[in-house]
Amino acid sequence: MEAQPSKGMDDSKTEDKGAAVDAELAKAIMARRFSPSLIGTETWEGYIFSDMEIRIKESTDLYGAVLWPSAIVLCHFLETNRDKYNLIDKNVIELGAGTGLVTIVSSLLGAKVTSTDLPDVLGNLQYNVLRNTKDRCKYIPLVTELIWGQEVHQRFPRATHCFDYILAADVVYAHPYLKELMDTFDHLCQENTQILWAMRFRLDPENSFVDRFRQHFHVEELYDLPSLSIKLYRAWRKDKWTKDQIEAAA
Ligand SMILES: C[S@@+](CC[C@H](N)C(=O)[O-])C[C@H]1O[C@@H](n2cnc3c(N)ncnc32)[C@H](O)[C@@H]1O
Image (tube, rainbow, N blue to C red; front, side):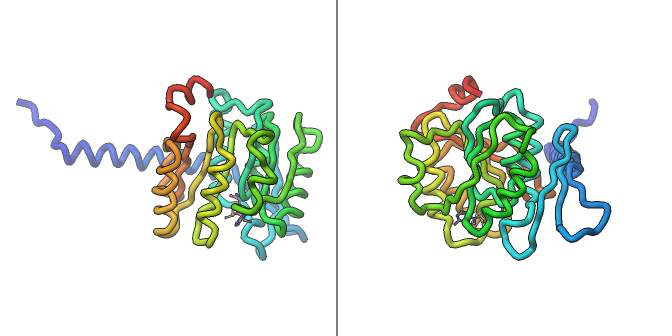
């Protein structure tokens, strides 16, 4: 009788395959990043979208003024899944947009984007957004302040601000506004809204945010990239949508 692989061997083969998929995908995603070949006065990072170069001005003195890997993961997903997640003419809001890469890529993919962050970050965000979307997009993104939990109901009333997608990259880390962030997701996410959220795992409190998030929303894992400590989630309201309905609408 032929020897059968033990269960343990099967498991380790599956793990090896998972690690290979992770490594390959992570490599493809990060290969989109490039840096200036000459040192100049401005610090910037480059990102390749289709055959275009996106240049992101960074500043090391602000948390939101650096391009984080989660943004690159989310942008890669949006570009490579543009048929299934068609952003053309869709209303999109980005939370914690930082240097603006996700806003820029969604706009290049045809969305009407509201790009939001803290007041201090908006100058650099607006600069990057204009520099990379002017004459390239159907809709110029709107850059505006959104401090999580503050006047969100008044500034973004549900009756007039209905978003197809909420995008967020690396907005959960050891800051004191996790409850306010959850309330903001909860307010902005309506019946037909889908959340696409790239999460970088650093510390335990972030894991408990994911657990609490699952209490409010249905969550599907789209990417698991252990080599980058990043997962990409799709989420939608628990009380409104079934997965089949979401898939039918995508
Ligand atoms: C780690 S950065 C990620 C930036 C960008 N999404 C990226 O991935 O490159 C976190 C972002 O959240 C923003 N942020 C932090 N606390 C916030 C708050 N209370 N309200 C709104 N935005 C906030 C920061 O200004 C920063 O742009």
